[in-house]
Length: 514
Image (tube, rainbow, N blue to C red; front, side):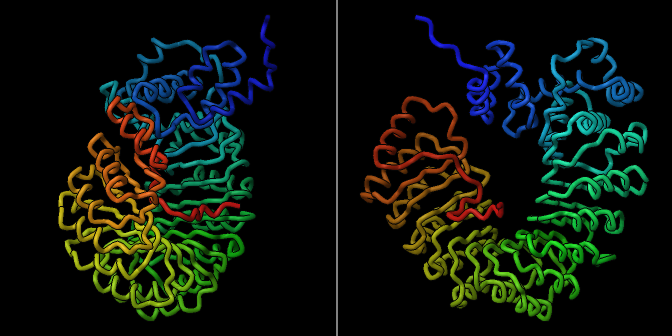
């Protein structure tokens, strides 16, 4: 008996269900013409995925090179002594089957640059920024579905971008995320006209990230973009100068978004009274990050006492900030905090955290960079549920991990080790042997090998621990060998679920979306 044929709608939903599994989507391309036609738009929604393997990175660049129009090819060939693209176009003159760029919705500046740089490296050619310019010219020309755009000001080369192009081709009305980077001073009319497109056509941007190497250019256009959004949720402001701002216009414009703005990140800001007075009016703010700030005084800290918002998350990273300033910021903003992250932690800061009786933290993130074991004993009194440790040192320090285990409050049920290197297997064993048995989740940014898995299984058995529910590790989808799979099976039999590591794991998700 012949099986009934699936109709096209069913096939579409089957394929769409696998849209985040690129390897499966590549297999769908080979089924038949209809499956291929449905799959390609899903594959090219986010072609510069961070999970791309080396072969795929090379393939994606070659594919987009074939999609360049004659103007873009001539732009590269004209400067062939720099980018060596003439031979490629001579040897590859086939037209692509699909208009791949028109399906793009996500354009990350860092991912695009990394993949193009990787391609040049494999061709044994010096990296050529001209190709990045040509690619952006093509993406902005062909795609009218872009939702997330990361772009650098210096791609607007006047040899290929002009006013007519800006007016005619660029459609960014669907944009929800804008990441704008000033890599050098751009004063020309083309870039200004490009920014005006956002003012005119983008009303639903939820997140804006602004990175400036120069302060005093195009601030009016940026301010107008902020003002014109219906519900801006997140604003990130990164400066690469340490001078006072030439104008407070950016912070003034944020006041227009006080009904909706929930996340504010500031990097390298030199604080002034007017800036802080604008910030405290953002009454919906839930997350505030201050990174490498300057000119913060005790008097300025007191302005936070009159903040109209109730923070859930506060992040402070400042190597040169006085301990008293850090603790005063926490004092005035800490009443409603659930998540606190501090870099460059000290005894004085930890002591103050314990003394602040109004603190009711669920999560504490510590970037541990100094060699002071005395800090650890304060953990017993903080009684947080989630402890996230960012460790670049101490990874081979057995005493540190024993002290850490002994200092954990019994309320700390989730612990994350976020470091660049593997934790030594014996050190992990010493930590778990000295730790209480109330842990619900163990979280490791790195892959667990056979030895690590055995240590974790022994911890469960030895402590008769029925509390551990989650083991979160980096890259859980790798190919495990037979021995590792057997240990994993035994761990799962104890009621522990193996899941993907969540960077900066927290029990509460403050994603700030509607």
